[in-house]
Length: 284
Image 1 (cartoon, one colour):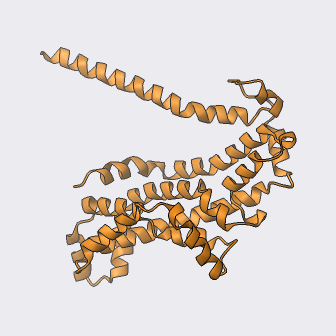
Image 2: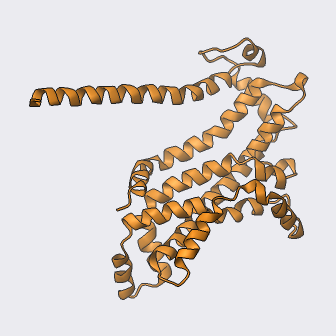
Image 3: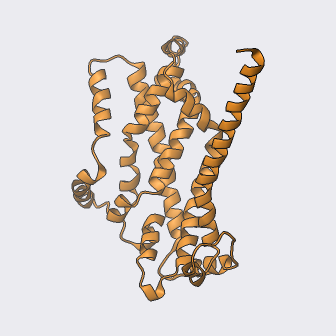
């Protein structure tokens, strides 16, 4: 095979790859477009079927949603931001610290602790839900954000990803050099390890934020006050409303409200996603 035919084959494969990527991108973004279009339509328009063009009912849907006495949308948005934000921050920081301890130190139960932490990943949340609720009642933490934030610090999946990432990007020789220079362990972790982990931290921060943002099960068990409920609970409440009061336009607008902060967080941290996933997936 000569050079010209090889070049032609490379160009052909590149064109096919681009076409496939464009098609997949359109398929992924199409449902977001449908969501935003439906959020601009009225309940009567939505009952007529699909429409590819936006309507003029967006401001009315926003106004009715903001002034709804049963759905405190602004407080729900703030509650979700607080819970998801602190969960992402604390989960990534302490999971990185745990991974650093397993990666940087040698101790007798090192392999056991690593296996034990991974074993916790196999336990579904629903299995421990009853005991968790009883514990929160005894500690008088029901209807509080604390049970939604503090337990999320122990995130085995985040720990495992950080551990794999450290093995490829954080050489032990660098840590030893910092200790020889007189740096303490916390300074070594915060000023040397963390900066090298920024791509991985950004990736896991997004995943932790989205996971906490979309979490319905635990907040539904813990939160009882309407002013403390998060957006997934409010969306479920809105969808379960009486048929005569049910407004599909409000539902779509509320789902749009719930997606926008996630998109903003993704756009802020997106530049680190590709590098974080690429390096974390390949062990150096």
